[in-house]
Amino acid sequence: MVSLRSVSILFATIVIFHFAAIIRHWYWTVRWFDIPMHYLGGVFSAMVFYWLFSEAIAILSDQKVPFWVLFAFALGWVALIGVVWELSEYASDMILLGRMEVIERAQQGMRDTMEDLSLDLLGGASVAVFLRFRYNRTEGAPRA
Image 1 (cartoon, one colour):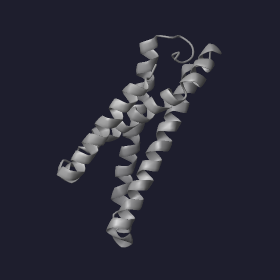
Image 2: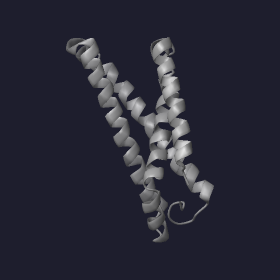
Image 3: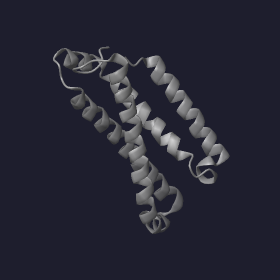
């Protein structure tokens, strides 16, 4: 299903682009740059979910658990990772920018946060749907 190799390659790709973006200031100069990064973050989170829980997913698949149940669990995992990421961004803003500036930017930050989380979920949903079609199963999840 999802191999450690593919998870590792995607992780390395995201890290390389993230550090390049920080060094080259792409997050501030290329306004759209965080869009593919959050999408890839969602893809990565979902791939980690399917890799970590592949044995449990195979057991559930044998018991004919509907695709939508596993889809919900995968998206829940992606949402959890996305929220933790957004909280870490908020905490770093509080530390680096100071409390008052963060509070003043809070309203515009809410829109950005919701867009980021939506892109995370879209990436995670893409992986779930891809795996569903890849393994072309009528009931349950793809087997490991």
